Length: 324
Image (tube, rainbow, N blue to C red; front, side, top):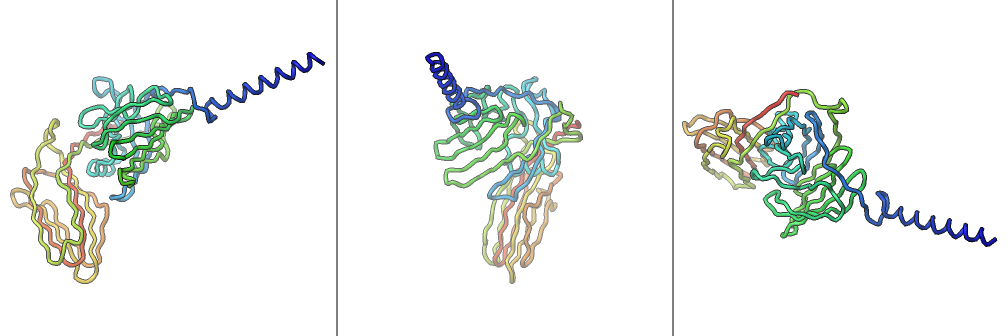
């Protein structure tokens, strides 16, 4: 009887120990000792994301590893599979994860400096700093599991980033930027992806457009019979020289009755580069277009009648492409 009681006691102790161990593994609630190492990307790897912002219509883009030999062999080049989407992202500039990405931390470049939005190996409780969206952030790893890691980054003004790294995809499954007023400025969500090593890599041409802001303004209910004239100078990219083209993005809406908008953009030789007219009840959102031959100075003339709104963004663009 005594030996049986001892054996039962040992079984209960072992069961208790196993239960405690279960609270600290990847499925428990008592923390995790998992670490996630940096993945190795291959040319042709891709991720399809949806992008949502408060100012612009939602869009999707397939991000593709176009090269693994940038920055003297220390960085990848992340491009887009569609020239139209590449132009959209260049002019709206809401996707920080395009262009060069470092091998060691998958760091994105902002103003020519690699920014460690991630640091590898990822361990629970780690903290570090970086800059993005013209703000300074302090990031903390909240949780690490075998399949993913969740992180949050805070800025001094109260803005925050919430993002999850997916170990199977080898990149973000979600990335959300909320400003200091609680407005969600960007929601980036992974839909699906493919790995070149598994035979699911992207084939075909991919594009990266190096953009530069040239002009941006919004006119809301500008007033009856309002006329606006503005000029802006088109200078070269600070390091890469002349632009290949300019990209414009516009939203326009006219009320009923006598509402209308006319838009004319002329270069320094008075040649018309862009002309548009909207009449009563007309609406147009998310229109992209190109102006093929930038000149040194442009003059924009706008007329508004009635209840009418317009948003216009123009960016310089240098296009790079790869065939995979």
